[in-house]
Length: 128
Image 1: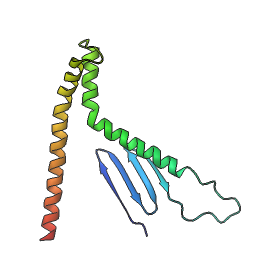
Image 2: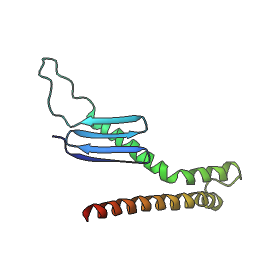
Image 3: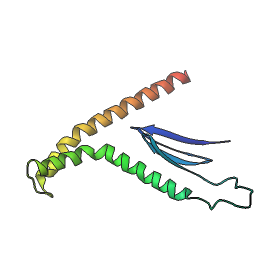
Image 4: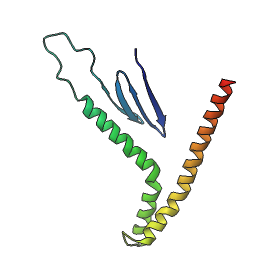
């Protein structure tokens, strides 16, 4: 019997179960099994790269999550340096980055709050 949990947010999905671990972004996905049954033939498989695949999937998941949150700051910093001629480590670059980042963080926080509110309202309605 498979027991596990998983989820999906912003196009990134991941999950862990008693059979293995997996992660995916868009059409790409990676997964690995914990082990289980081995072939009974004389030519056994060589174990595979399960933990390595899981580690790569986990790293990709964290990278995508990082970029989902920080892309406006990175874009604003790049615009400040390339278009306005700000020095690479400068107050102007940081200010433009945060001017681009702040509205995105507010929208992201609002969207997550609305989703949490709807979920809690649905759970509360199912309890009654």
